[in-house]
Image (cartoon, rainbow, N blue to C red; front, top):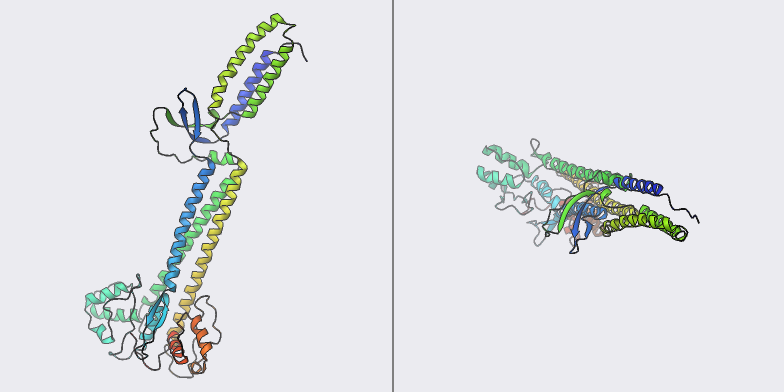
Length: 444
């Protein structure tokens, strides 16, 4: 062990280097909004207002809330598509033919296309927005021509059409609306509904894709750079300042002024301890020098004692565990991506059903012109998955030879009701295919 006293110039230089190293390392840390609290004894403590993990949890919460709203909207759309309305054929007592909401007005239009006389009973419609039955709907074709302009415009509004200023034009437009896409259609009115649906669907998918890209960009910014380097470029959201009394001050400062490098401090303390031990062993041999050095050591001890209260200020500042932060990011990314995948699947399912609905409406339109038993039927698709339907009759005459079980399977694939009895099932199939019912053309 050396008997020479330490070179205090070297000690001073080492302390300066340690101080500069501490400041350089602290300067790389991100800004943090903190509360500096003074206790009754005058001691100060520092508490961070929001940790990085809390900030990420808030982001995840907002994303989940947004996706919950998208999920709710999809559920409402599916509910409307699956909801049913009832046709009651006037010529078949106690019979109720139900159809999905999305099909109801289309089936009604096809049936009304078969009407030839002013006394024929009209198939009624439902409001295009609320799906409720339209009040004061004309019962027969003749009632349509007895309506005044105000009544016609009111009915056009409920059917989702624009009003008119001319009574004959209004009557023609209302007739076209009621048989939209069928025999009496004139102008672009027939495609307006499907065109609007297509635009709305495109908007929803674009919004979902945009949200997805925003999330990917956000997670990429956090995970592809070091945590400190990323967070340094961001300012954490400020909370409203609250009056917590005269002893609490809310301020924004840099971590360079707050968080020391405890490894450097520990090294410094260890070096001082070694120096003190070395000095104690040589104190007897150097009494005079010991007294001088004791004074210098006391001075340095006083400096260290002054630093300790400053260090105590930061006892409540939890250094973020980088691995814990990265693990939280990975879990959040996985959870949010699963939500996006589920929502995307629901959009695909909805898109498939809308394609099937559109295809079947066009097929019903063509089938509404068929009159002979040998006329070939335009096939319809499965309402759920837009696939072809097995055992679908090829001609009008083939319907007569279908058995009870096959009729039930076809009706289920079309989303139509499955009544009991072969005759009722055949009647329901003719309606679902857009054919003219054999016993009557009048529906309420």
